[in-house]
Image (cartoon, rainbow, N blue to C red):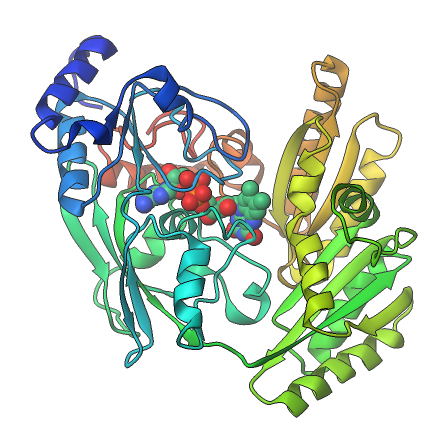
Length: 475
Ligand SMILES: Cc1cc2nc3c(=O)[nH]c(=O)nc-3n(C[C@H](O)[C@H](O)[C@H](O)COP(=O)(O)OP(=O)(O)OC[C@H]3O[C@@H](n4cnc5c(N)ncnc54)[C@H](O)[C@@H]3O)c2cc1C
C-alpha cells in the first residue's frame, strides 16, 4: 500500500467521479441505490453495496477508470454476468463495480484460423448461437450459459460438462487484452496457437478471478461442431460402482465428452422441482449420465454401444440404457443443468463446495461425505463432473438455526480436509473468491500463499483491484 493517510471514502469517490466525467456518459455511471441494487449480488446470494457502478463500452474507458481509481485510491471490482458461486464479483469493500456487460461484441469469427475475438461481456450462449450458423462451437459452455459472460468464464477458468474430452476454458484462450490496475493496456498471447515468448501471462490471467487485471478482449480457439451425439443413462445402487464404471470406460479406450454424476438427494430434489422428470429413477443411489460424440454416425453409435456393454457388466449397475433420441437426451441434460437451481429452490440456507480429486476417487469422496453427514441435521446433496473428479456439494441448513449453521461449517471443513487427504484441491471451477479464501491454508503452505500474494502485489501494488478476494487478508 502507498503511504500516508487516505481521505474519507466519500471524498475519494467524489474526486474519482468528477475526474471520470469527461470519459463516460452520465448513463454509464450509476450512483442511486435502486440502480446499484441490481449489481450488489451474485449466485452466492450474498450482498454488498458498491459506492458506484460503472458501465464502460470500450477499452479506453476501462483504462481511464483504472487510471483514476489508482489516482483516487478507489477499489474496483470487475463484474460479468454475476453467476459466480464464490463471490468474486461482489464489491466487499465498497468502491466501484466495473460491469463489463456492455462490452458485448463478437468482434470476429475467423474461420480460416478457427479463432474468435470477443469482448468480455458476450454471453456464453450468444456466442454458441453465433457459431452454430457455421457448424462451429466453443467447447467451454458452463451450465450458466444463458447468463455467464466470456470475461467471467475466463476469469474463473470455467469448466463444463464436456471438459472430460475438450478441456477447460484455459485450454482455448490464445490471447487477452488486459487493462492493469493503474490503467496500462497490455496484450498477453495473441493469435498464434504456439507461443513461448516469455512467461505465459495468458495462463496466469485465466482463473485469476479479476484480481490481476480487467480482461477487455479475448482471442480463443474454436472447433468444428461434432455432428453426432449419443447419451447414456446409468443408475447404480452403490456410489463406489460409479468409480469402477468410469474407470472401465477409460480403460476400454473410450473418452466420452461428458460423464456427470447425481446422487439420490439431488435426483429427488430435481424430480420435485422440474416438470417432465418422470424419466428419473428415484430408488437409485446414483445416476451417471454419459455422452459420446463424433463426426461419423456409425462410429459414434458403436462407441455408445461399447459404453453400454461395459456398464451392463459392472457391479452395482441396476439400469443402463441409451436415450431414445435427442429429445430424451436433452431432457436428461436439462435435469443435470437444473440441479443447482433445484437445490436452491428448497428455500434453505446452504454452503457450497466445489472440490476436485483424481477422477477415480470422486465416488469415494462422495461416500465419505455422506458418512460424515450421517446423523447430522443438515441435508447434503452431491453431484458434478464425474469425468473430471469435480464434485459439487450442497450442505443445506435451516435459516437462522445456529446449531445447524455450526454443523454445516464443521462439515465443510471436514470435506476440505478429506479432499486434500485424497490429493484433491479445494475448488475445481468456481474459484476461491470470498467463500473459499479462509480455507486456503487447508491445502496450501504459507510459502505457496506468499508466492501468490507477491504476484498479486506485482500487478496491483496498491491492492485496489478486487480487494478481499482469494487471500484471507489484503495484498
Ligand atoms: C446455475 C449455475 C450453473 C453454473 N454452472 C457452472 C459450470 O458448469 N461450470 C463452471 O465453471 N461454473 C458454473 N457456474 C458458476 C459461474 O457461472 C461461473 O463461475 C462463470 O464463469 C461466472 O461468469 P460470470 O460472467 O457470471 O462472472 P461473475 O460472476 O460476474 O464474475 C466472476 C469473476 O470473474 C471476474 N470477472 C468478470 N468479468 C471479468 C473481466 N472482464 N475481467 C476480469 N475479471 C472479470 C469477477 O471479478 C469475478 O471474480 C454456475 C453458476 C450457476 C448459477
